[in-house]
Structure formats: structure tokens, C-alpha cells
Length: 535
Image (cartoon, rainbow, N blue to C red; front, side):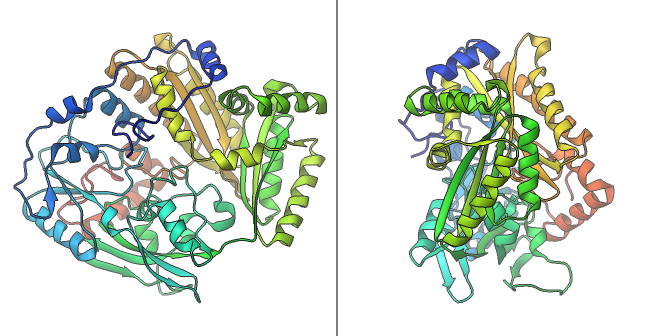
């Protein structure tokens, strides 16, 4: 069972290597662990539900606490301190579209709002219950999970929206298929959540982002059902799938998702390289993207992230041998090296040919291979969120943010973002460790994924204030550079103030009009996606 106030499993404690702890202590200062609130005390403080008992709902205080928050850092601060602020008044667990429809009708009759809840992995406040006059019903979609239909001739698979990543892949694998969508939250997030947040997977360069994989499905809206047939292509007006993609629960609840699966590839590899500096690493990433090689992933760490990654894996034979090997090969100074990961999947002959092209491009830029690193990354690639638990226990807060921009703007944006975060708490004499990588590359540009670490305060309100200041400053840098406010995390409630800069006044008016048409009473996910009440 997952822990109620973090990411990992109950009773399983992640470990911060001594080398990483020493690095953080030198960079931002020694961490001071803060005591967590006890679950029993938090549950005991839950106020009575404002809703009358319904046969298909629960008002159990523990259940309500477990559905009150997601995985953003502000959520963590609330959970760890026991200051939740608000919890849903009830939790509903429908098992199909008819059940979802019944919840909506009942909630509307009671004057309640509805928040869809998939895996609870939102890092932008997408499932967070906020104080307000209206009662809140959290709609847990786990009961809709499962494979409905697999058309092996067409490669179309229909899943319940509450199906998690591992369950989805396991169901497809029994007949030799895969979706290939692996976000960092893969182990907990759901296929419905991927669609409504417009998710990108680690290997989306090969398999496609979720908008390419989402073929159709069924959306229950307060105004009625919306069915999206899974045509291979259509010129019949605007594509209404694009309205559902990124809608984040404001338009209704996605109950069934049709995805485009692909046969499991013959060969899957993750090759690692080390480039001598950031400039050559950027040239490599852009070259690989623009050559349109059949790659599933290109991931490029800045020098600071490369050094941090090596510290996080600690000592031991592998990391020590790698450092010696890079020194012998003369691949630049430690402080300038950049780690590059390249994923390949497909028929063995195609993978071999693409791997050869990549290796030649690396050699042309005087980079070298990093034996064993790619295999280790693939093995541990979903462990990063669990490290947040370990770092919190050591007295450090960790958050991430991401964006995407063109290749011309990227170097300046990366530098400005790192500089802004590292100096974002100077006024409090606190330091911030911030580092970035390119997680997805495209012919015209790339995403930029940034992690930042700072010390916890003994006062949760001060920790929240530090996070708010850093989040706001970084978001303003992104907007000022004309980059997208989110590449893969969605808008939630944390980014609503910045969406207008990207969409423009008319674009925001169009979004508001769509919400008013499908949800005229404002039933769905208040405060998410749109800052103003569209009603």
C-alpha cells in the first residue's frame, strides 16, 4: 500500500547515499528533518461530511484524507504537516460510465462539485481539494480499470480509464502488444490521467506522446455523453479528441479510452554516452532529432545534473570504474561532462543500424560511450519519485518543473531558469540546488525538465512560502522566454495564472465557452485549468 503522505510504499524507506548527502550539505546546507504528522491525528481532525449518506459513496474520514491531495510539493507540505486545509466530503467509486453518470446527477442535486481521481499523481494541484462553500465528491476511477477489448487486427485496445500503467502493459503483453507510454509516474498513473493531462512518456520519440496514442473513447459530461470514435484519420471538422486531451477533468470524466497499441519490439536498448560539454551535447541532441532516426528516446543531462546523478548513485564499483574510464578517455573536466541516453526499439536490424548512426554522431563530436549506464538507468528509471521521500526524511524539499521551446531559445532559457532558481531564496540566506535535462527532443526544439532542491524549514508555512517563491519566479522566466508553461505535467491549479500568456485572450475565451457548454453549472474540478469560474 502506498504511503499516505508521499510517494513510496508504506514501510519501505529509500536511502540517500552518503556521497549525495554530502553534496547537498555543501551546496545548500545540512538538512534538518522535520517530524511528520501522525495519520491517526490527521484523520481524527477531519470535519464531518457536509453531504448526506449515499449508498454508493463513503464518507469515511480515512478515505477522504487519502483522496484529498496529489503529489505536488504543496500537497506534500500539507500532508506531512497535517495541515490539509480541506478534504473531500465523500468518495465515490463507480465501475462504469453509468455509475459515473449517476454520481454526477446526484452531486449536482446536492450542490456538490466533483473531482475525478485516477492515480492521484498530479504534481500541479490537479486533484487537490480546496476550501470552499460547496461540498466535494472525489470520484475514484480504480473500479473502471481493465482491458475491455483488444482488436489485434487493427491494434486498437479499449481500457477503463482507471487502468494503471503496469496493468495496461501486462494486459497487452499477454498477446504480444505494447503501448510504450512510460511517464515517470508510470507505476501509479492511469491511462485516463495520461489523456486528460496530455502526457508524454519517456520513450515518446518512438511510440508517440499520448495524443498520438489516444484513438478515441467515452467522456461523461454534465451535459451528456460524448463518444469519440477511433477513426485512423478524419477530415470531418475539428478533431474533438483534442478537446478532451488536456481537459484535466473540467469537461467531464473520461471512462473508456481507446489506444493505438503496437507489437512488442524485437529489440529494446538504452545506450549511454558522455559528451565533453553542454554545447556538444546540445548539438548531438539536435542532430539526432533532425535526422529523424528511429529512436524511442533522447535524454540529455546538463553538467550539473550529470554530476548530481553520479552522486546519487553513490560509490561502488560501477560509478568508480566509470569515473576512471572517463578520465582515461579524456572526456572533458568532471564539471563540464554531459550524460546522454539514447533509447532504441524495433526490429533488430533497424535498431542496429540506428545505433550505428548514433555512435557515429557521438564520435564526430568527440564523445564516448558509457558502458553499463544505459542498462542501469532502464532498471531504475521509475525510482526517482521515491527519492523524494528519502530526501524529505533527510531535511530537503524536492520539486520539478518542465517546459519546451525551440532550439534557438533553449540555451538562454536553460541558463536563466537555473540562475533564477539557484538565487531564488537569496533574500532568506537559503540556497537552492537546481539542475536540468532534456527529456524529449523534437526536430524544432526540446523539452527542458528541471529539478530543484532546498532545505525544509521547521515551520511548514515557511517551507510553502519558499516553494511558492521559487515556483512563481521560474514560471515567470518560462513565460518571459515565450516557452510553454507545461510540456507534460498539465496545468492543474498551480499553472492557471500563466495559461493566458500562452493561449491569448481569444483562446482563453474559447476554452471558457467549451467548459460552459459541457458543464454549465460548474460541477467539474473547480479551480483546475481555468482561473476564473466559466459560469
